[in-house]
Image (cartoon, rainbow, N blue to C red; front, side, top):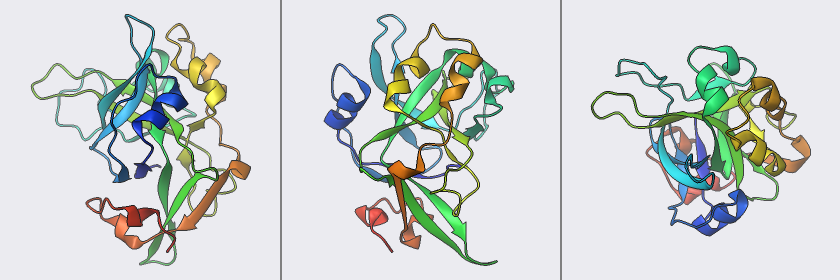
Length: 220
């Protein structure tokens, strides 16, 4: 699963990386946790242009009665056929900008070591995501989830899953609202090339979701 990540790229960097018409101010986030608001790139239905929106991390399927915590992850191999995600997979795909994600390696029965995994280049990248509009209940907000896949050689020693990271050349197809057949986009959800990634252990302070500090990015 992917239960924590960071996004420290500026609004200008995000706009350039994802082809946005304008840059918005983004506050660096060093330890993003489920249920928090996150920046998401999607296509605006009326204009066909890409835009940035703030969604709650934890997808609540359409038709839910409210009160659900939401799905922070969905398995790329099966999401397209699951009732909770199939409609979003066909019609509401999105990009979730990130500069790194955390996974916890089990040391023994009592200890787990957090690792930061990111691109070796340090540049911003995109998780493949799905989103849902706000449910028809008071206080509901739009929500999203991160798709996960099999780990590559960097992530495998740490965890048995990793987020599905999209290659920049695949952004357009993933976001294309005309593409509604799962078979057309499922091949994009593959482990990202390990040769382009790096990992290192970080402070156990990231275990606390309230610890949102640049120290999260430093090698332990």
